Length: 72
Image (cartoon, rainbow, N blue to C red; front, side, top):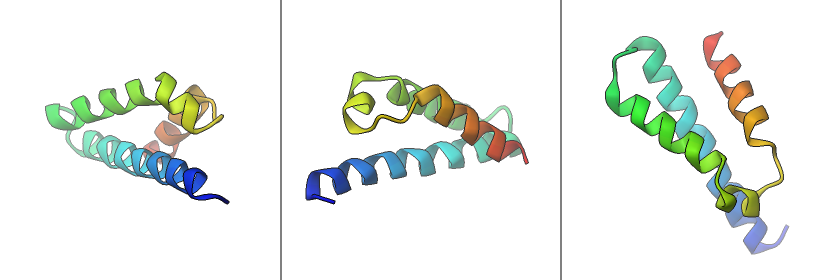
């Protein structure tokens, strides 16, 4: 893996970690406006052209999988 690919993977991994965290906070505190804002911003990122440059993973698949994982 080259340096650029490692950087791209790191960006996606951090976004996934942050999204999981926001979803978990929302599960515990559904009225947490900061968590809701963060989750929405990350969903926007997952649907952005920048995300498409970084990875070929379908953003809807990723979001759905992370939501299902958090519900458990």
